[in-house]
Image 1 (cartoon, rainbow, N blue to C red):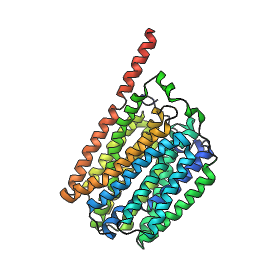
Image 2 (cartoon, one colour):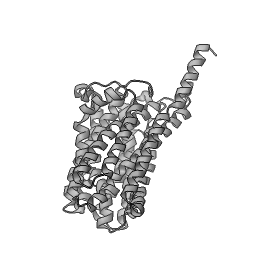
Image 3 (cartoon, rainbow, N blue to C red):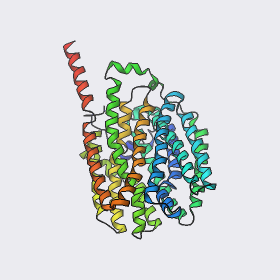
Image 4 (cartoon, rainbow, N blue to C red):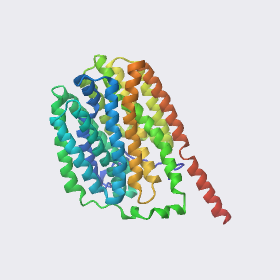
Length: 422
């Protein structure tokens, strides 16, 4: 149930990887390991993209934002393609296609990382990785349907283990040479390909999820569920637009304040480690203060706003650490909840498509974030940027509060029809 239903929460491992770590299926473990490898590789590069384009290639923040917008735009298309492929050909083939596309482009970056080859290859990387993510999330939900949100939380934690590892190593490696960053990314994608070939081939999705979509029209019409998903996804997009500033404008801003690349990468290491190690605390907070997925998201967005208020008023590295800690707590509320909503809303046989929508909205936020942030900073400064972000986050609170209103109205009507016998 999407709204009004209380979320069952016990211990950290029960929520995120199955009680005691033993209830989670082996197939999901394999998916989580793949997510860790995949994100570790990408985290070598994505937090440093703006710095590389601005400092190494000598382009403005606006140009850097536009390049990242193209990368994310390709990922949006890849998300939709990946979700559709999952519904048509299955998770294994979809993931393999995405990996091969990304691996070819990343291999190209090792040898061609100057302007404009960097831009072209980054676009291809975005498309390939865009195919992979919704397919992996949809497969996670399919191989463990009884796990509910725990399957998505496990994938979320796995992705952030990758962020912690990749960010910790990426800044250190980049301080010697960006060439090593591209090479390390390529090597990790080779490992990811091998894992997919030998580990994902035998994974069978829950066939009950491949029923005729028309069966869903016996209850709430599909377009009502799709509308609800689009509304909550708009707020999700705005949250990611704000969040992406940490990997674009804020990244460059820290360099201007004299914060080293190693220190900046440490912020992402803190982010990843806190997500992995701070789950018991957040689980307790969620248990007492967020009784539904909707309230969980709203609280998380409010925490996002607080983090940007903090970063608005600091120029010291310790201030950025505090802001990152607050931001991380907010994302631990928001990020796992939205894919869960998508999975619950999805008609049978359309789980991949719905996950594709959610992932494309997140990618859309990452696409718009750098270019919007770059323009605002170039012409109006960082203070204006933070003010705009706070307003956008406030709008996302409203969309979250309203997304299921039509669903509730339809359910009430159906219940009335059943009671009256009409």
